[in-house]
Length: 252
Image (cartoon, rainbow, N blue to C red; front, top):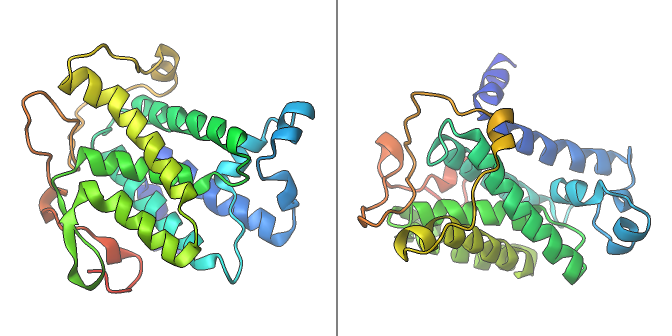
């Protein structure tokens, strides 16, 4: 138990709360402590009955069952793995900036979910974070099933196909990729590479709530710059993608 506790405490602050909520809320729904009908996003109940918790609960809830359990575990692994890499990499010791990334992506996904009548928003938010990581580390070579190797920039689209095979839908993954691309374009691509104005900036109140910490060292990729520097690798381990750290299905 001490090993589990040490591992849990080693998870970065923001990722730890997101990861914990994504376990507790589905568990609450699974045990019937709260009916899942109160956890999903229904526009009518949100707008007309002012059930304002639904955009948050629908981002953390996933209906776990015999037909969805594997998909849930895969995406929970994506959440832990890539959110940790972003928070300890490009956003190292900058929790306010990372919270703003999650908040911006979440707002875009909630708006999309209300328009498209989507009840579950967990996968889109996870995929949006994975997309940002992939773009900030786009030249890193990752490996997938059966030794397949490709650049990280293609990873979100490979996973979209993978989730289609095991889940039967690509809408959630596609929305996540598009929202992640919107954040990446407005935050990095347009102002840095194209010389445009900066449309996104972290609000000052987030810096007061989550102050930056000094002596941060980024180890998992850096934002793109006009100098066209190649993205950094995966720390001391090089650019190999650790897909199989959670489960063995042909990953390395």
